[in-house]
Length: 319
Image (spheres, rainbow, N blue to C red):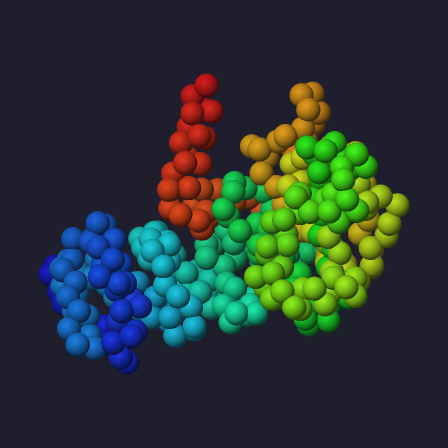
């Protein structure tokens, strides 16, 4: 059955945000739906088959809600919104758009961009230890750091501890020039970048000076008990089983841990078992520990990254 509906906006800025510059979002929608979409003044007219018209109206309403919450609308939100609505998950989409972690130093709202990310955030909120496993670009590290900053600002923890295994240096950093910080900086740069973005440079430097934020290689966690801390282990696929056990047993009272990694990108020497792979199997039935698995649908970088990941998965399966 053919029908026509309209969506009304408060001003031209809202329409531009929803339809995109040069109607780029409408072009994406027209690749999926056969409906006719015509912006007119402060309205958008949608005409076509009844079911599709209602889906597009719902999509525009969700995008408008997202914009009114202070968020920029990119092609990712449009494509993901279409996918969710076509899969009859529009209610879950609305809850995802409504979730917010914190606002960065630049005023940017940090929100989940996929359902996988929302599940991940809920897991971090509800568990002592959360393990996030998935490909590059799924936001595993950035969202973990965002939750750590949120917990620190809300005085749920007293400090943030970030660590990565320095595989390329074999965890033996003594031969490198400079002090400890200079030796490990290349391995910890992605963590620094996330903190700069979330806190701003001045606040980050102040917290580092006061030891409220500690960034160190995994080898320096040995022998410690970490109370009232938010602890993140990044690139955990490059831990050995012994290192992973050592790290997990550092958890103290009042603390949370997040472990992130991509089990398809293990850089350990041949014959070494990834501590992340083993932990995924060993810890699956322990209350207070949850593993969240991301896939190509959760990639929030350029859309072609998701296609690249899928192509490599298909190639490996074929082999």
